[in-house]
Each structure stands twice: as structure tokens, then as C-alpha cells.
Image (tube, rainbow over all chains, first blue to last red):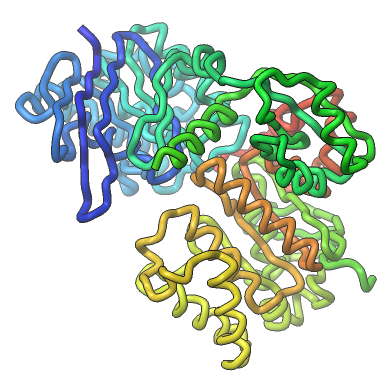
Amino acid sequence: MPAVTLKNISKKYGDFVAVDDVSFEVQKGELFGLIGPDGAGKTSIFRILTTLLLSDGGSATVQGHDVVKDFQEIRNKVGYMPGKFSLYQDLTVKENLNFFATIFGTTIDENYELIKDIYDQIKPFNDRRAGKLSGGMKQKLALCCALIHKPEVLFLDEPTTGVDVVSRSEFWEMLGKLKEQQITIVVSTPYMDEAKLCDRIALMQNGKIMSVDTPKQIIKSFPKPLFAVKAKNIYKLLQDLRNDQEIESCDAFGEFLHITLVAENANEEAIHSIAEKYNPENFEVKKIEPTIEDSFIRLMREQSDLK
Amino acid sequence: MQDKAIICKDLTKQFGDFKAVDKISFEVSEGEIFGFLGANGAGKTTAMRILCGLSYPTSGEASVAGFDVYKQQEKIKKNIGYMSQKFSLYDNLTILENIEFYGGVYGVSRPEIKERSAVLIKTLGLEKEAKKLVGGLPLGWKQKLAFSVAVFHRPKIVFLDEPTGGVDPITRRQFWDMIYEAAANGITVFVTTHYMDEAEYCNRISIMVDGKIEAIDSPSALKNRFNTTSMDEVFYELARNATRAAD
């Protein structure tokens, strides 16, 4: 039995379609990522799965329970960390933890092992009000509170948004450790580079799933050879290549431009001869493996072409 | 002096015993795209508030667009544009009303507003939406519009505080096209971001850790110095020893 199933789930707010006929499954013990920008429908899906929002169509289960009929069972078995900080600002760190433990009929001590690594980092602030904690600390406390009843499935809605690179990588290390404890984790993020840290991912845009697979497989199914190029004047190169008939796509990626050609079997020589027309200074080209972001952009374009 | 948009010397802001900004010094040239990076809680927001004329420093010197941060706050405000991810436009005003409002606040004359907003709406391809509420626009469009509004009064410098957070990867790149265009027109761009690939689009970046600027250079020079090919690693090396709690 999968830990989470969605079948043709849809959700509308007025005329706005937030979730559009979404289906996928998450296996037990899997670290599953919903990857997409704001407005992709990630939060609505989380709220439907955690029984906080009713879908307009389709069905969904969590640990075999129906999200509409068996909402109470589900609430006991899942941990949910919303995107917005939702703990009691006027309670201290310890009081918040105690509160959530009590509500779920447990104690901090009973499941201490599970939260120990994370809790240790905020323990020095046990008596500080949650509202007075820094962003990173709030995030750790929220994760502790979501874990305190030893949930079978953990839902994390954009836990790393607006967080710096160092804290982000620490957070993903914590998730790795939780996974070892057999907890199923569904996590959303707008950062494409975090996608590769998941077992499987769903790429989402405008309420739709564009692709569900392992990061490796998504990268492997990129249909064309991809090249990274650069030159002294990168902005001019971008404009030149973008307007060139032979270039299919050209997008800025850090110090490089990632390009694909209209022709099927492109090589570095072909790229050189296209670029030469524009006399770029210090021109470099190399064939590269696509990133998840390359795949995401490509899928977005394919979708909008279909419309 | 003329070609410097921002000059900071030993700029410090103290709250009680806490040095939020600790003697930072740097200069930004006119027309430069300058990335202002740092760990959460490093002091970026505090420094940015001083440079925008919203807060007084405790000590040190700074000038923005040639105006002093102690004595000429109002002149600074007139000569800069500002946009952030959190607040940019009024959701319950239409696109046109938002433009008129901002233009008016910054003292652009009525005929000028009329002429420029028509051009702007056309450039953005929003002719059909001009009389619709901003609240109904997709986030990517809102952010692009917010940027256009922030430079509507043709400021000397525009401050962008995480302008692309949560935006899809295609729109994020279109947004940077707009930044390049503004810079090409002589507007200095001062931008913060958590996307390390965007740090690469800047002419120079600074990285703040615990109130101090730990590194300032072009992205390629920084990568050379840390002997790496990724900005991620440069940032990680500098910020991982931060003692301040991340905020």
C-alpha cells in the first residue's frame, strides 16, 4: 500500500484552477518532492492531503485512509509543517513542544529519540517565546512540533524558502536522518537544486504535474544534447544566440548560457560555427548534463506550446 | 566621486550591545549590478534600510546617489527605487492605478505619467489587463510590473530585496533581462537573492557574515580565490562559520 495516493484531484478557487486533475503516489519511506514556483498548486495539495481542505473532484488517501471520510485517523498519523510559521508566538519553545505533545496524547520524552538531533540545537532557548526566535530556529522548532507524535507521514510545505544556502543544506541533512527512521516525507520547494536530494519528484506548474519520476530519470529523458557556452560579453551572446535560427533554446544559467540546437545531433563544433558569426570574445563551449531546472524550463515551454 | 552610486565607509548599526552591521565599507559604481548576499541574520536588511534612508547608522559614513545617509534621507528616497518580494504593489488597485499612484508619489508630472505608463503597459504586453486589479495577476507578472514601477520615476539606483523569490525559472530569467536593460540605461542595481546562479549575473557581489563584509569581488574572482567552480561553495565556505543564529 502506498503511503499517499492522489487520483484526479482538482481544486478551484472561484474561476482560478489551483489544482488541475493531479494524480500520483508516494511509496512508504520515500522522500518525495513537489517542485514548482508559487502558484503551482503545492500548498493546496498539502492542505487536501492533511484534511484541511476539501478537493472539488478526485480522491486521495494517506496511509490507506480516505482524506474525506477518515480525516480523524489521518490527523493522528501525519505531521504538517505549513509554509507560514504557525506555532504559538506567545508560548516558549518548551511550552509549544509540550502543547503539541499533549494534543496528540504523548509526551516529549516518549518520542525524544526522534527529535533529539534537531531539538538539541534549540534547547538552549527553551524558555524563549517562539515569536522571539530567529527564522532558522523557528523552522527547527516547527519541525520538532510536527514530529513530536511520531507521524507516519510528514508533510513539509516549503521549509527552506527564503533560507540561506548553509541553513538549507543543514535542513536537508535533517530530512535524510528522518528518512532513515522510515518516515515517509512529502516536501515542497521552489528551489530546483533541492530536487536532486529527493527519491522522486513531481514537477508542477499552474496546477498541473508536468512529470513525476526520479531526478536521474527526469534528467535522462531530456531529449537533446545540452551545451554550456560563455563569452566575455555574456549578455550580448545571449541576445545573439537567442535570435539565431539554428538555436532552439538559450537560457542564462549562472555564468553560462545553456543552449540546445534545432538540429537533432549537435556537437561542440556545430556550436562553435554558429557562435563565430557574432565574433564573441573568449568563447567557450562544453557539452553538459542537464539539471532539473533545464528539464523544468523545457517542460514549461512544451506545455505552453500545447495550449 | 561622481561615478560612485553608493559609498560606505565603516558603516555601523548597533542595537544595544548587538552590532547588526559592523564597520562595512564598499563602493558601488554607477550602472553596476551589485549583488548583496549574506546568510540569514547577517545584517543585510539593516544595511539596506540605512542605504534607503529609512534608518540612521550608529557610526561610519555613507552616501547614496551623492546624498548623505544622516542629513539627506529625503533626497535619497527621491532618487532611489525599491522593490521587495514581500511588498511591491497594491492588490486592490488596477495595474494602471498602481503605476499612477507610484508615479504621483515620486512627483512625476501628470502628462509624463500618462505618456510613460502607456509605453510601459505596451512593453509589458498588458494592454488587456491594464484596468484589472493587480491581485488577480500571476506572481511572475506582478514581480515584473513591480520592477517596472520601481524604476518608473527613473531613479539613479534601484534596490531589489529578493525580487525573484518563488518565481518560476522562465520568469526569473525574464526578470533578469529587465535588470540588465535597466543597468544598460545607467540605473545602478543593488540586489539581494538566495539563488546562487543569480549571484553570477551580477558584476560584483559582496557576502556578509555576522555583520561584516567577508568578501567582495566579481563572481569569477571569488570562485578563483576559493578554488571552486560554483558560487554555492564560495558562499558555503564563508557563511558556514557564522556564529549568529540564522534569521
